[in-house]
Length: 309
Image (tube, rainbow, N blue to C red; front, side, top):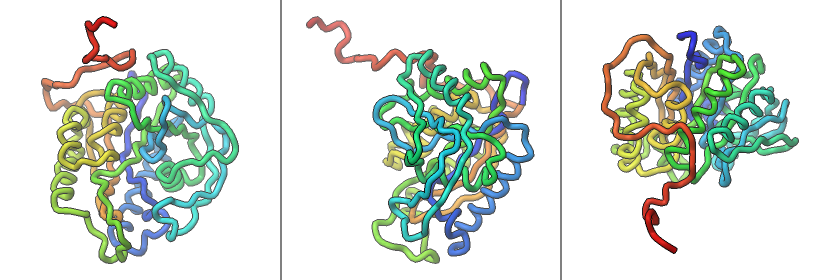
């Protein structure tokens, strides 16, 4: 890591509770759990000051919410897979960083607010990620929501605000995106031994995404997100907001060492544990089509431009 980069490495992990609650019921779920455990050890061996979680299973409607309750504690049950059991948790949040993140987001033109009250329903993805990656709460965390209606510009600015807060506080971070690859799931119960990726098309596109990740081509994934999204056609995929936020937070380039630690089906969806580490090498200059954004100034209202009332 260069002296200027506050992000040590980034992780991309699935939100479903199977690796946490039922890793022994399916070989693939067990491989995902083993990959989580490996990442936990790598986090513990790092000198990270904070773990930043961007979770696609915490949707927000107006603006961006950031968890700053110092020790959120509750028992969570997943909406879809409640039969797997309960997930009791008690986490440690970096409230100081959370407030700084919210301020940095506001400074870049975003609407942001902090959340701090007992019993706030922390989402499945965040519960799974923190329970497996930081089980002893050795490192304080920060969880930020994924706004359902934010566009690319807004999401990129949200990622840049995270870097602003890290630099301002002089902290180093591990960033964690909690999201699936393909997200088409079976609508009926599937026995663990029969779990598989929902369709051949989903599998093909998952493999394309994994190839890009393995080569460390994060900005390429971000730039190509609309094309990938058009093929898989589901919202909570790597091709959408998670890739935009991750690239903006870590650095918008392809200079990463990528490692796919595990990939498996989770009730038909594509689950993967991936690590991206900033590197000194480069894939060369790229001609990107998507523009870069520093401040969010609202929707462009392209259709109304120049029209008189």
